[in-house]
Image (tube, rainbow, N blue to C red):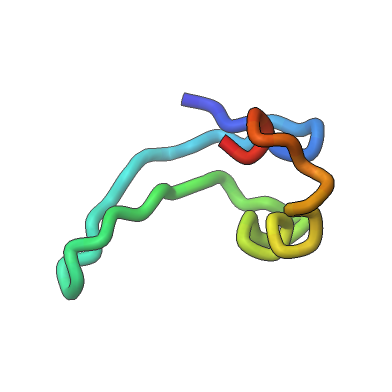
Length: 53
């Protein structure tokens, strides 16, 4: 599985579940330009819905 972000391909290594609260988490390749959370905070208005999904 691969995820495209900011013109580069980030590989998704898999899914895991937090045993404390049962939330699911995606495990991504290290992103040297920062986290997906910070990227979306900074660029949310400029992204179209297709890019956000």
